[in-house]
Image (cartoon, rainbow, N blue to C red; front, side, top):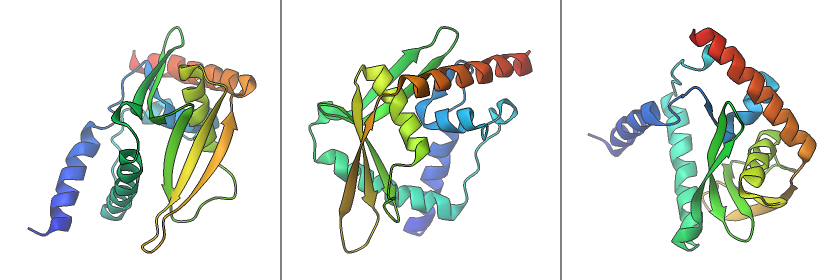
Length: 179
């Protein structure tokens, strides 16, 4: 068996178990898709099927991600966040918890400003860790250079209230579908 086949087999099994949908627990990485209306309640329990190319792209990103995390003390890596929002929770893992929450993102090209979906994810981490600012670090996936860019993100109460409201509506619609 080729190494590519082993990687695919292992990752496909992991993907079945990853972010298993649970009513009342919504992942910080999905918040923007919920707020923007891209992630619909009727799609909540549909399995996410990834093609082989996407799996390998994620695998390469994971290698960069893991390497960057290895440069910091273990106690700083992947801190769980769980925000109790009354009827539901928003959960996630901050990639690095240094003086402020730091989120690592790998990309083929570093964006000129942080992506909106990453800002929304960071807003949940800021709320969940009670910090007023955080850092989104983009790591460019390139075979010959290691380039990163940091963007500071400030907590925004209005954005948080939008997240809370829209995820609350999503949760209520999901409960109606479930019954």
